[in-house]
Length: 362
Ligand code: SF4
Image (cartoon, rainbow, N blue to C red; front, side, top):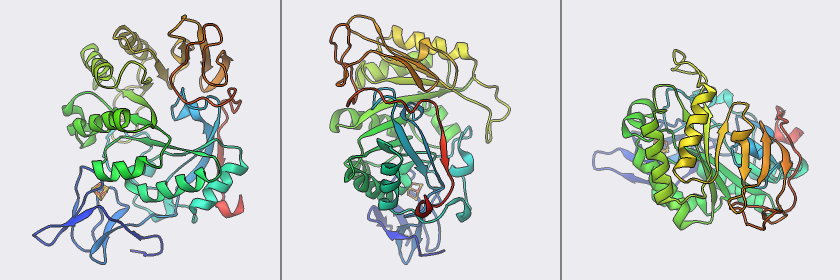
């Protein structure tokens, strides 16, 4: 196990049986010397838990913030997205499994220091850097340092996460984060247990924490999988919970599943399922409900709660109509939309710009 990219970490404890338990996520891996956790990137080395992928990335790409998805955070702006390798959940439907399930160090590209990443984001005109493709929970120390380097240049930091993190490291990590998209993968413990090998309540705890104990702007995504988590009853229960615990202003995205990883025998999500889910959520009183991974102009439109005007109309990830002021007020009635707004909508559009070279050569 190479030490070149390994750093010491602090959230772990010694057990009476000689193993060391990692306390970063609720999985609580108990490791003997030389063993890696389920996430693969944290391991017991030199009788402590180390993060073994500090300063390495599996690739970079510039894309629109709407793709994270975040519809109420610096609309239309470009984001430098990157990830590392590994994940702390084991979702059978993973849509990024080549990265999240990677056991190959080769997946990780050349060294990318926090300063390198911030500099490149700046040079490419990105308003934010997003930790995505795999969950930043497992490499949070690296992500926090990248966020700090970005903040020095006025660039914001976005966490795209499943929210499966223990309270103490979570509080440390989200001090550095400006916005998040949290996957709420389903609304039953059975789904989390069988399909993700995790627990629903830990994710709900993270959502409540973000809403009530931080200033992090966050939106929620639920990937609807036919026959698994798309019943009227489950969608209704999820929306009721969001309304009661987080409020009606937290945006919710319903996105379409495509067959992948260990779920290739499940069909893709019909667009009608997303439309049905959106209708249920709106009926439950949620104000900002979107559909994703499908062409659906209505499901990509933000309506003003004050006057009902369509204030942001999106076509896939591109903004086609924008009627908000620089500080996010409806131009028709002055209602302040929830979110983070700073100037006019930017025009990155749908473009996706992969960056294959190592950052030192960008
Ligand atoms: S962060 Fe990784 S090593 Fe730590 S408990 Fe979670 S899966 Fe296990």
